[in-house]
Amino acid sequence: MLLVGVGSPLAAQDASAVAEAFETYRTAILASDGEAALGVVDAASVAYYGAMLDLALDADSARVARLPLLDEVMVIALRVRVPADTLRQMDGRSALAYGVAQGWIGRESVEQTRIGRVTVTGDSAWAEVRSGGQVVPKLRFSFSREADGWRFSLGALQALMSDHLTLWAKQSGMTDAELVRAMLLSVSEKPITPDAWSPVGR
Image (cartoon, rainbow, N blue to C red):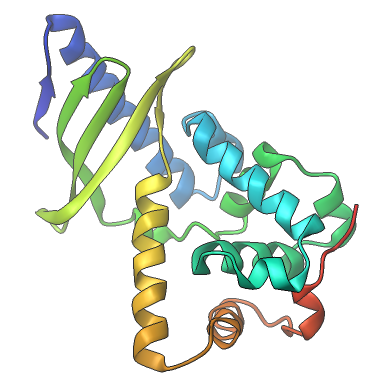
């Protein structure tokens, strides 16, 4: 692993801390340890899960249909795979931890993944992504320095998944709703009924 700190010896220490944050996150995902993952993801990642939770509780079918495809999958997954009473008691942190514990953030996304060169600039950092010993083109993980240290952002993984879903939709010829059903049925035995596009309610 090549660690590059920008601007000062302290930045090199930051680069090492960034690498440690990713390894902690990776270990948490492989162990389905939601609480451990929460300890190293950034506030923006938690906020994303909070926003998806709010949509699962409140958004009607028309609003869900207008969401980006990944967000639609997330909202329907929350409605279908989490009991309604449990959903109503969640916040962004508990929703993210639940998703990790249930394996929604797939092991395959990190199992063969390592980070390589780390670049630190102020309170932001970026790391090249390696899989099978090779650099993954056009993919970088991002990190943010928060009050208690460096945190991993799920944004790059979400963007990658979004691109894959968009490509799958184009190649399959399915509507968004059909693709959402197919994707969720591939990982869950629970039926996907039209009610899944209606708000759970608070």
